Length: 204
Image 1 (tube, one colour):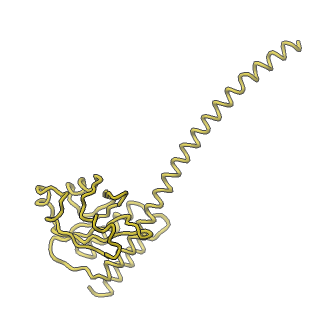
Image 2 (cartoon, helix red, strand yellow):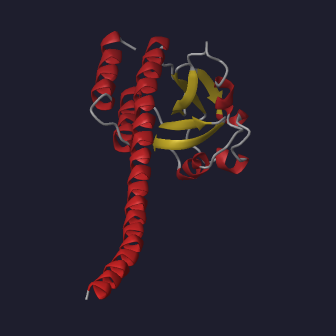
Image 3 (tube, helix red, strand yellow):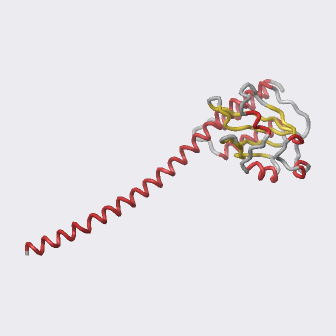
């Protein structure tokens, strides 16, 4: 792969993924860019959470495989990347994957995929997969670039999702607090009104 082609891919991904706010739509589009630029058959990104993984975004992935990847599972080959901090990527063959049923393996259009670990503070947060049906080589330098770009972008995405969830929780708590204050205010007004009425009777 020529350097200028590699540079074009990196620049496109940086322009796409490093903006004010990264969302699922931008991640999905970036996978489409990867597919086109690398002539791959499928690309998907999974999130690691407490030693299990689940699908976040995909492009070109078979619907059955998508459904399978959406379910949290612990038997994925990518599990080998958890403690392998020195590994920049790994190539996995479909026939050796234990969690994909044999009947599904025959339906899939690819035979192997590159698994690129995405890390934040040396912790595995996700895996970027690029699949091929025929033997094609991606240069190691590009794989390293992809690992760094997607690690930073996905870390930012996860952080934004946490902030969004915390904002929703805060809004719910504020609503609950308003209801509580309104109820307490109403309960406090009732004896005060009664006391005022009693004092008026005494005064009269």
